[in-house]
Image (tube, rainbow, N blue to C red; front, side, top):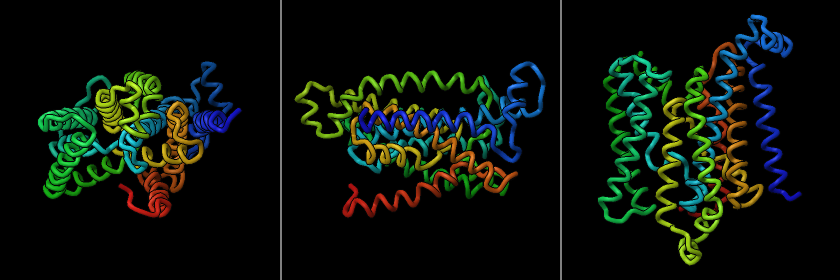
Length: 332
């Protein structure tokens, strides 16, 4: 058994352990016996907490962490840059502008289990992807470079608009905006998860099929062309799919930082750049890592729940600095 297989097995075990253990840990520890009794038909309070509050939150953490890690792998491969993140095309900025606009307007409703803020955030991410694509087409050359240029341009506009919203908001609105911008795993229902997981699995399957193409593209575009890889088509489709996946989870959880940077790069250091290994390993480790980070956020100053984005930033900041020092030269 080679190193890559061992790492994948270790990531799977880590994910399984966090899935089993995290729902039992919190401001009130839960007894596995009480949870089993609930499954047997007894209405125990601990069983209700486990299945109606903590388990959906843990599953959301898995979905968010896995999605951001998967998108991070794709962005780093196509841009050939270990510091690329799922937010490179401006999806986070578009989602934030949509969500914060609804918070400022005081709009509140729910459709199919999604709140007005979540729907506005997703609409913002979709609009961002559409604008990036149209701007890149306007430049008459649809490529990675034009997509990134369009994304960076839109990000400046989004940042300015968000600052205006903050300036015009009162204390309560500003607090809600900051809370959303940090990113957190609020309690969601199983319906929301059931509506979101299928899209994740579809995108994962597509990227898994393209893993060999990613191996070639991450090395050299000319080499990929010589091997018959449809470079522009794969790059464009993959970046748009990764951005859509990012926009979906950001709409639910907010823009949680550093997951899409840390996990893919760490696994690349441990097992190499083969995307047939990186894609499944990143999904499992990313999901488990965010569950662990959220468990820390829920327990470190219990009963107060910190936004998980604070924990991931505290862990990701030192890693980012170490990465810069390790490069010993220009990043780009």
